[in-house]
Image (tube, rainbow, N blue to C red):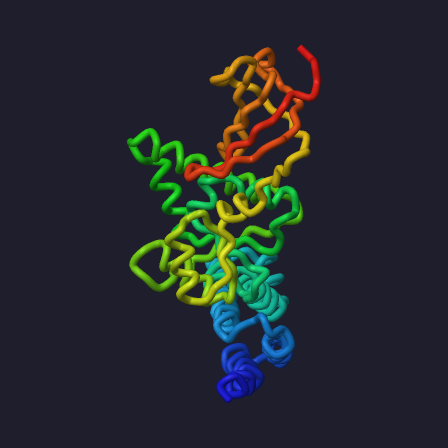
Length: 318
């Protein structure tokens, strides 16, 4: 009911106000067309919200105010040619400035009130994911698609860290800012910023609240954000969990290429490590210390600290 009331008010009220101020039927027609465009946009484009329309009307008023200022300046200059041109085309100038300002306001409305769409294609990114940096590789490879939403308070958090006197904090903040800059440079990836503040006293709760508002997913490496997301029943993409789930599975008989870092306890043994820190014992790998060696897994030992892999060298390169 409120929307229909606004539509009728816009279609009737805006032309009426134009006639009262300008007494020009040409301007009345243009203002009616402007109101029609606004109402049609609100009706047919469901992503356009009532607040966006109000912002558009406010922008139209600013445009008309600019016209009045220009008219005053023309009168003050008292240049015959300029005054003649202005007065003969004042209605057109007024309509153009009003409509142009309204369109600019509508375009910038999402920046004023936050992102305008909702859905699971939106991923709310927190500071921990940007500082971690692996989100860039996921987006660049196309594994993480959709629209990334960066809250303004996350950008402020990164800026605060980057300006810290603590070297570690400064490095973390600058890394997060650099990853954000690189994400914005990825072709085809939409990265938006919202000034909307989520509810809560901590950044973790604000992230979860914001994602709940937009019906979005969360991208993080923070366990506390995971918990907040679980409370609100939100999908959370924890990059650390993703990394663990994508660890390669090495079964007996699997051939792998390893960089041999040091010698083992037994004769001719070499020691290497997988990306997740798992230790690999290489029989005959001592001569490959400081080099890469191809080895075949023949045994796996599960310990309290993780898995240990026992392999044998399967090449003879020096």
